[in-house]
Length: 121
Image (tube, rainbow, N blue to C red; front, side):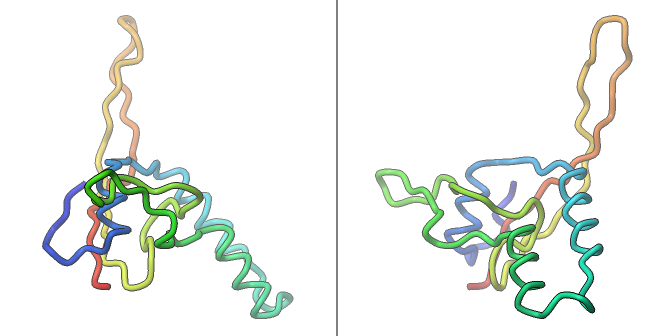
C-alpha cells in the first residue's frame, strides 16, 4: 500500500500500515449483496442500515496507535473495498498473486485487490 501524498487521514495511514490485501471475491460478494437490495420493498432507513452492515466505514475510534501516536492498524469490522471513510481517496489496482501449489502443480494465479490509501479529510 502506498501513501501518495501528505494529506491522508489517520484512518488511511492506519490501513496502509497494515499492508493488507483485499481478496476480489470478498468485494464481489458484498457488491452482489448490495445490488440485490430491494429498495422498493424496504424503507430508506432499513436500506441504509443494511448497507452500513454490509460495508461499514472505518471510524476514528477503530484506529490503533503505537507509543509515538502513529496509526499502525485498525480494529473491528470494515468494508472489503474502498471507500473506507467519508471523503476517502483510496483507489484500487488489480494484481495477480502467484502461489506455488506443490512441486507437481503449476503456479496458480489468484486475483486480488490491492489498495492505495489516501484521503482528503
